[in-house]
Length: 203
Image (tube, rainbow, N blue to C red; front, top):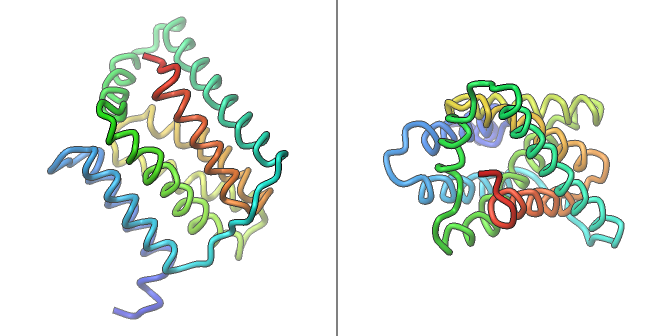
């Protein structure tokens, strides 16, 4: 196979879709083996294809990362409250999603914070969105990148996961295209998951 095809955006995106479908839907083995392994492979792939935008971060960068992660958590908390108040038939799906992605062992938290979260940013923002920036304006790249990120989660079989990818994906894509520094998006993602899955789980 042509070397350029292997490093192309469509090939990389297809690889990510396959890994997500296997991790969330097919699951031939445990999710907490499949998903970290998938992100580890996608991280290596992204680094082999493109130069990552990383540089030292300032105090203001930390503020942006931390506050955006916290605000995103409260947006999700509001969404869960809206589901309860309106009676939308999504609580069962929310429980199923939380059961799947909620770490239940110490090693899961290691995979989550050291491999999964950084890996998602390296691949989706550092590879996919950066490639889109060569063809589109920053805002269009953020929007298109978010759309690709959300669509890939369709194969997970959860509408809530797709919606989560839309909202969170746009925040992290926007942070990246505005700052061109992946560390800030990674900080935001880490803080968000810290609140969502460890400090103040919604379920």
